Image: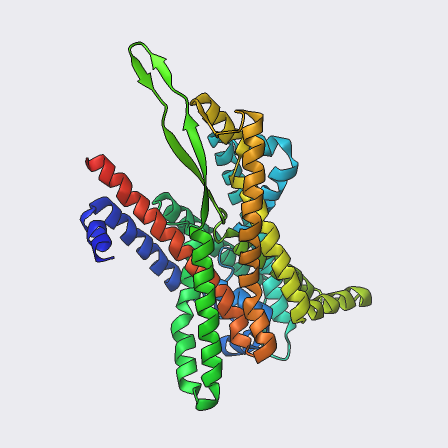
Length: 424
């Protein structure tokens, strides 16, 4: 570990990249504490403390939501936009073809950024409307049309600012920028949580702490296992004679990871699970009786831990498969192997290789998706037996934190390896 740190420090460009990423995260944390004027922050925090759904959403915004900061929506609109285009790519052939080419992916990224703007306006409008409807808390009072529009512009600008920071971080290849922003938001709430536990600790909470420690340990071990786990598919390269020289004839392997999607399925699942409740709260004060009743039913349904756990489980499981389909292309891999004279022993090149890789990855991902989904709802199971509210949030947070740390460390190690070979 110490040797790795020394190597990072000696690599000047890598050291600068890491400091740049850290400075961007610091800027994000500073922005999360710049409030928008005209709101009762104390009443807002009381409201978030009483609402589990908004409390979870607040964690992923880095506390910016309960501060009503300029970046209160975090990167949620950008994630929603990404989900929309990735879903469209599964059903629109033209978008699917564009994803296979670098130029096409760049165009889709541009469209994703543009779609983020109206989504940020819509989501911020919904959040402000929800807060205004909570008359018992007096969170927002006497909001003029000018103030309303100003808030929408400021919050939307804050989201675009975070999207830009996330892309700058990703360009440095020191982890995924959006994931690191969410990671920073979760970590920022840790000191306050620890202080609160210490301040209110007594002997009756000893078993509570033990239960939380067990959940944390299981989550960390589980995420590490599924992230590091892989199946090595043997690949043989045929010998080729060119002039007086012979090429190929070597054996290697194609690594297929148990969880290729990393932390993205968790982020996608949380975004989807939170969306119905957020929309329902927007229509709670509707004048039409059946709309208000439907909104109330949706909120009650998602507050039911059994229903919430089942939906969350299915979303994590489905998005693990979905995102793997997006990033893993067996047909393209089979074509590249065939062009390079490579083949899997016992499998014919071309279509048969593609089908073999597709079937293999589906079997592997089933185990990874199932394990990831179980770990995601494990805190909810513990809460059912212990009644501990914090575990339901802490488990999901740990899941994301550990996965992002592993992903970031791997990218830094790959950067070190690349510089080592370039140096030689």
